[in-house]
Length: 186
Image (tube, rainbow, N blue to C red):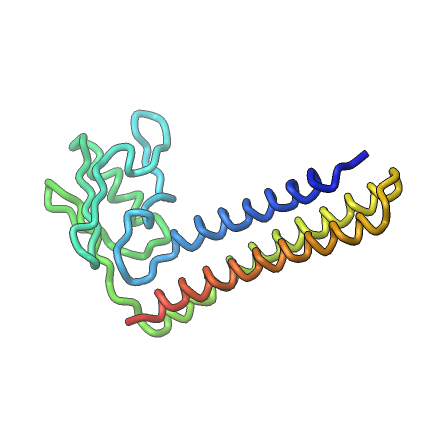
């Protein structure tokens, strides 16, 4: 027989995963100020394996508008530059032989709107995941009724599941509002 607590915990775990996904996705959307997390998704070829830039270089943000990358191995300069150029960052790196600098240009109004729309899309994906977790939870509760769970217990569990769902949707909305504010701030 399916335990109500197990069912709720499983649904909540799925909802947590959706929140973690959204946090990760929003971190990679640049909002006009420099962050080392912008480079997290970019991989470089280092001795035959694809690794993040942070594994082959020191990545720092000396100020709010630039990222400095200091490769530990001089042979990595070209590889890192090419990876950044080929990425979807849309920023040209500058190399002075010692450090690769990435200047983060201020966002144009059009680009801000584009990024805000991209954030909303990621938020919608996370909301769909949360709703799917709720639906799966409700389905397993209905199966549990057939296996002998009391119907009033099922109704109470569904109400709890709805409250959990609402909490996560609110959290997603708050995250999106915060990122939107960050993007739209000039």
